[in-house]
Length: 302
Image (cartoon, rainbow, N blue to C red; front, side):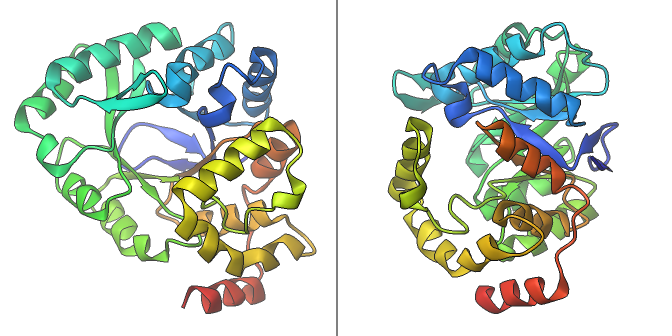
C-alpha cells in the first residue's frame, strides 16, 4: 500500500480508502463478514475509513466502531459525515449548528473514539455553509471533538465554494473515469491546500452493470441502485466495458489506477463486500495504466 498527504492537514492516508457504507453496513449483511473485511483492510495497510451517520439506514457508523474495537487505531484516519440522518428507509437533512454538533458527538460514541479525525458535511447546499455553522465546527476542533473539517458533495458549485473557505480542510468529490470534468476542480482544491478524496471511484457501473453475473442479494441491491439512481452513469459506463478484458489488471483496478494517476487525489474511497474484491482493490495501489489503455479511455471520454 502506498500513502499520500491529505492536503495541508497533519494526516497521511492510504491511496485506497475503505468505504464503510451501503450493503456493507446493512443488517442483511452479516456482522462477522463486515468485520472480517475491515480487519483485512487494516492488515492490507488501509489507514482511511470513511463512513457516515446516515449510511446503511444508520447502521454503518456503529458497525465500523465495533469492527475497529480492540485494533491499533494509531495512524488511522476515521472519517464520518454529518448533516444527513437516517429516518426509516429515507434520509433527512439538518445543517443547523446544533444538529451538526450533536451528530459529531454521537459519531464519537458510535465509533468508540476520543477524537474524530475528520468530520465531513454531507451534501450541504452553498447557503447552508453559514458563518454560524463554521463557528460551531471551529469550536468542535478547539474542544478536540474533531481534528479536520471536510465537505462531501457531488455538486461542483458547492465544492468550488468550499475550496474558498479557509476553515475547510478536505473535499470529497465524485471523481472517476466518467468525471474527467472534475479535474480542474481537484487542481483548484490542491492549490488551495485542501485534501482531496475521490468518492465513487468505480463510477457506479463504469464498466457496465453485468446483470448476468448477479450471484447474491448484495449484487441485486447494487445493480438495482445503479439502474434506479444512476442510469446515466450506467449508460455511459458501457463504453468502458473493454476494461474488463485487460490482460494484467481487473476493470476495477484500471478504474482505481485512473483516479490515482491524478497526484492531487489523496485517496480513492471504495467499498467492498467480498474479500476477493477488497484484495483486488488494495492491489491497485501503485498500479499504473499502460499508455494504450489510457489512450483508449481518453478516446471514450471525448
